Amino acid sequence: MNKLNGFSFDRVALNPGLFRERFDANREYLMALETQGLLQNFYLEAGIVMPDLQVCPDPAAAKLHWGWEAPTCQLRGHFLGHWMSAASMIIANNGDRELKAKLDIIIDELAKCQELNGGQWIGSIPEKYMKKLERNDYIWSPQYVMHKTLLGLMHAYEYAGSQKALEILSKASDWYVDWTEAVQSTNPHAVYAGEEGGMLEVWARLYELTDDGKYLGLAKRYCEQSVFKKLLAGKDALTNTHANASVPHAQGAAKMYEVTGDKYWLEIVEKFWKCAVLDRESFCTGGQNSGEYWIPPHMLGQFMNERTQEFCTVYNMVRLADYLLRFTGDSCYADYIEKNLYNGFLAQHNRKTGTPTYFLSLIPGTKKKWGSRRHDFWCCHGTTVQAQAIYPSLCYYEDNAASRLVVSQYIPSSVDWKVGNSDVRITQNTDMKYYNSAAFFDDSDDSQMSRWLMKVSVDVSAPAEFTVSLRMPSWMESVPEISVDGDLVETSSLEAAMKSGYLDITKEWNGKSEIKIYLPAKLSYSYLPDRTDKLAVMEGPIVLAGVDCDDVGIRVPSENPEDVLFPVSEHTYDSFPWLQSTYRTKGQDKELTFIPLYDVMDEKYTVYFSKK
Image (cartoon, rainbow, N blue to C red; front, side):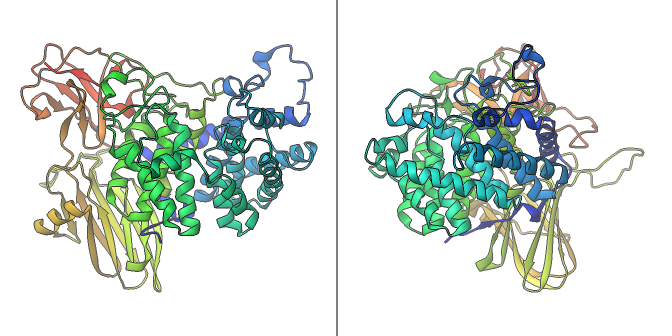
C-alpha cells in the first residue's frame, strides 16, 4: 500500500552537524526538567501531596511548572505527554539509559495516579471537564490534553518498550469506551469537541500495534468529522479555521488508510493537502497561518504580523507530509519537509535553552520571543521537544518492492539496511575541507565550503544489487554535479532526474563505494503574492534574515540577488567548518548582513523588505 516505508529510530544515527546539535540540546532540556514538576498536575488530580507542598508559602521556590502547566490552567498536564513522546524517540534512537530511567519512573508514578483515580482515568485534569463537553459548557480543550498523555504513553510502549505504559493505556481506553458509548444518548457531538483531532490517529495506531479490536472501535467513534464532509464536497474547509486543530484530523485519516487500506481515507488526506497547501500560498518560510488560523488564499500580505507561523502547525504539517511521502513517493513532500525543517523546526528552536518561539514574527525589525524553560509551556513547547527528536525518521526511506533506498533529507547521518544476505550501511556527511592545526592546499578546492557538497558512502558486507535514490530538490536552478566512485553522472541523466525528483543509482555494490553530490543552491527572491513590493531572500530552501535592521528597503537592479549580495566566509568551530549562508549587501544605501533565519537568536531581524 505504501510506496515507501520509513526506518525505525534504532536504524538511523545522526552524525555531527547542525541537526545533531539540536537533537542533543533537546535531550539535555528533557533531562533538566525535574520529574516532580513534570508529574505535578497528575499528582494533584490523584490527591498526592508533593513533599513540602501541602502549603506553598513561596511559589517561586516551589520548583513547580507554571504558564500552561500551572495548576490553575485548564490545559495543565499536556506537556508531560509531549515529554514522554520525545524521550521515547531518543531512547529508541540511541538507547539512552539515563532518559530511560527517568521515563520508567514517570510511568510508575502515572500507574499509581491511575489507581488512585479509580483504576481507569489517567488525566492531569478532572473527569468533570468531559462532562462540560456533554453540556456544551465552555472548557479549554480537555481532549487535547488527554490526547497528549495517551500519545506519550503509546510512544513509551512503541519506542521505549514499556509494557506498563500499554497497561495504563488499556485501562484508560476502557474509560473512553464507556464515555463515548454513554454520550451517544445524551450528546453525540461531545465526542467531537474539546479539540479531539488527534484521537482518531492514536486509537488507529494502537489497533495497528496491538490488534485489539477495542481500539478500532474507538477509532470508529472518532471517524465522523465535519471537516471530512466539507473536503469531500470540494469546499474550502480551512480558511479562517484553527490551523493546528485541523491538521490532526488529516493525520488520523492517514493512519486509517494505513490500517484499513480503504482509499476513502486517502482521498480525504489528499483533499486536505490540496486545500491547505496547493490552494493557498505560503510565506517564504513555509508557514501558512496567522494567529493560529489558516490565512485565506491570496491574502498573505494582509495577515503578515508578529503572530505568524505557529510552530504546532509547522510540526503537524511536516508529519502529514511524511505520510503522503510514504503513500506516494513523490519528492514534492520531501521538499516541503526540508523547507519547514530549516525555517520552522530550526528557526523556532533556541539552540541554547531548548525552548521554542510560539510564533515566528515576520514584521520588520522584530525579535523572536523565546519561551522560558519552566514558566511558559505553551502548546508549541510540547511540539518543539517532539520535533527535535524526529530528525532520524525523516532522513531515509525504503522501497522494498524495488530494492531501493531513498536519501530524502541531506542531513549528516547513517542508516543500516538489509538487502538479501548483505548488510548495508549508508552514511552521508558534508564534504568540506577542515583547516584546524595545519593548512593544506591543493588544486581541487572548488565548492569545498558549501553545506550542499555531500559525500555519501555505501558499505556492503557482501556484493548486492540495489538502488540508491537521491532526492533532487526542486530549488536547484542548475544541474547538480554527482559522481559515483569518481565517475561523473551524465548531464542528460541529471536533467531527467531533476524532472522526476530522484536520481536512481542502480548497480551491484561491492565493498565500499562513494557518491559525491554538489547541489547548486542559488540565491533567489521570494515575493508576497498580494504584495509584490515586498521580497525575502532565500538560499536554496533556507530563508535569510537581515539582522540588526528594520525594513530599509533593497534596491533591486535585476532578479538576480547576486547583484545585491556577496558571500561572507570565515573558518569556524561550529556545525560547519566554514561559515554558511551569510551575506552582505552591496550598492545599497545601508550595508546589511543576512544570515539564516534559524541562526537568529536575540537580534532584531527583518525577513521581508520593500523593493526599491
